Amino acid sequence: EPGLYVAATPIGNLGDVTYRVIETLKAVDRILCEDTRHTAKLCAAYGIATLRAPYHEHNAAAVRPGLVAELKAGARFALVSDGGTPLISDPGYKLVADARAAGVRVTPLPGPCAAIAALSAAGAPTDRFLFAGFPPVKAGQRAAFLKGLAHIDAPLVFYESPTRVADTLMATKEAFGARRAVVARELTKIYESIEAGDIAELGDRFSRTEPRGEFVVIVHPPALTAAPDEADVDAFIARALQSMSVREAAAAAADALGLPRKAAYERALTLKERK
Ligand code: SAM
Image (cartoon, rainbow, N blue to C red):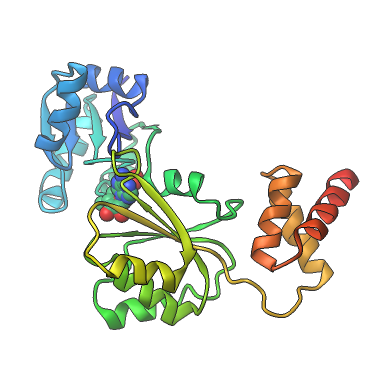
């Protein structure tokens, strides 16, 4: 079918690509790449001979109108980034918006995304979360950005570079106080690691030597300091039960609200039975 296919590609392990993405990359007229050399590796691994053209932040404004005109005339393009899902801290949003505004069909081809991979293995409550992308680089702007997120009652997910991950953890400590966090590094690659701890402790660990690789930082929501009232506990558990088992909902409530595990489990069981 004519249209724009937004294709997720591996974030490290080349095995993490879907059949549908490979078939589509083979069939389209052109693959729009963040970096054509990078995508060449995926194409070589799967025998994809389709023409590749660059679409990145430096040429996007210049080439977008022409691409949309071609799509309108019936072209079939795939959009990929260097890794993961296009548009998620990656180029493509204006192309998708303009294509849709021009009546072009836009089809997502889902697959890897570092934020989702990290959340799936971090052990933070996941019934909701806020994806915050890359924090600003300048210290003042970063502090203001983090302050604006401090009150949010959900895990926060950040992308960060190896040179800034320790600074960001420390800035997060300044803005949020003591909280649990998880640092997921090099997901799906040889040196994959997922480390949990207090934010300050993790900041200290990663500041000792400059770490290598790619990072996702997840900061747990604020724990309530005063004993939570019953209605808050019930609301939290009921929300968690929408996507979790009784055991998982109880563990999430115990972690987030500082409740004894047994009490959280009993309450979750009662609420589940009442449904
Ligand atoms: N669109 C991509 C996605 O869906 O995940 C994200 C692109 S963004 C430019 C790149 C950032 O994603 C990295 O700096 C890092 O924070 C995170 N990232 C990408 N691959 C990763 C991996 N294998 N392990 C940990 N973090 C990763």
